[in-house]
Image: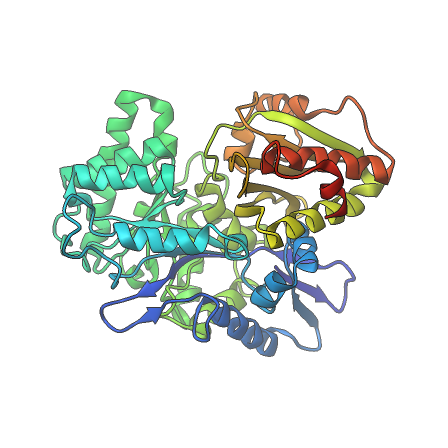
Length: 499
């Protein structure tokens, strides 16, 4: 998390940054990012970006620093290996990673398999195990023109691997002239049913036009099935900076299901994009609350490197940016997270929870983090994903509330959702395993308490019968919360308490 403090103010501004376009693997054209933690990899990129921004943004007016988000800080304090792996990377909080046209793709003997099934497995291996799962969000890659094979692989990637979106690359995979086609329409329709976003690489504005057309057709088909499904169609057009000379770009971005990703934009193009988008999108968005909801930050590393990302972030945080700090936070992180639903392998329903006085929230988080880290080091559990929840106005910041998908490695080995929530001055840690009333609050990642009936139902399901004010009782109940993860015979409560 990027935190900057004006010398004229003691109140820090916190910006949660998500890179929505990042490659992992090895491309057949020679580009490579095999290991995110290796020199030249994803984490090294984050460290170099942080150093660059410290040089360019810190001055006599502003202090700049980077630190992990809320509960992650406690986890890293409790597990030295995680801390060593992720140390210095926190200028970017989370990174969407997906395959290149890479060496892991289909090979002889893979008959009956989709082209990128091995590549998708590779992304899964990195993005689903701690500490990488604390930072990486895995997407799959597909070729829609493989028909039923592509649809089958889509379901496997989402339901079995837990990958969170799809990268489509028409030019690289040889279907650049067949975007506006029935196989792509079928694929978009199925992805919408699963609720996952699709990001298209684009080369030439004619491809953007075709993407818009096929998206419109998929939306119409979904409306005939169930109008509510149209909201789950989420199409991201990559590299919109390549298309700034086309007036129609802003008509495309005004489409209710289309968003623009900015990797590759640089120099004067950054200012041109925002000056035009802030004016022209305001006039056409209809029900959208802000023009900034349609623009998403991404880097396309390793094809573009640190100075491109730094230029973009620096401009969005500068006085020249024609928006508010809320607009900046949307573009740099909130927009992409809202398109990616939390990884819910099973619909969540509260099974057990611990509630504690607000003054004990730091203590409770520390206890929980130390136990999770200890059990991980002993090989008893893994963290498959880490989700954050959002808060924009009036604080323009990301909340410390979060959701972890934790899997026990012993006993029943089931996935369990652990949620940390702070509301109305009370702290909550809850364990879920089926759907509560109002779970749309989870899907939208918006947990601000307000008059929304759905959110009220959600909070009512979590509301405490009893609030603990004793640290030893909190620890005892947190142990009871974790115990089912490990199987009925795998660990005693006493062992948990000493973990």
